Length: 77
Image (tube, rainbow, N blue to C red):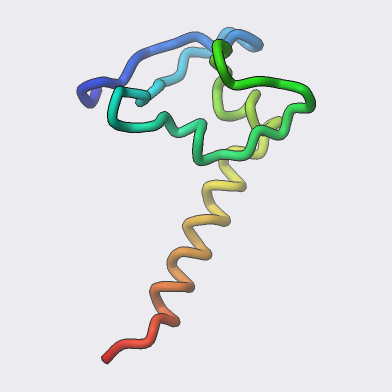
């Protein structure tokens, strides 16, 4: 496990997941949309699926595809 990564349990479903938050780096949760109504990330730790209502893998896959498209379409000199 990379340095600074903590093992946590989701406060909603109980599943174990990794948190990469350190003093100099944000956790993965800052890069995924909070799709839960009236939920504050401060003080609560949820797994990617609970945070995104089960859409974490689809969101991540879509972002990677967009990044690849942008790289492929970038003007090269």
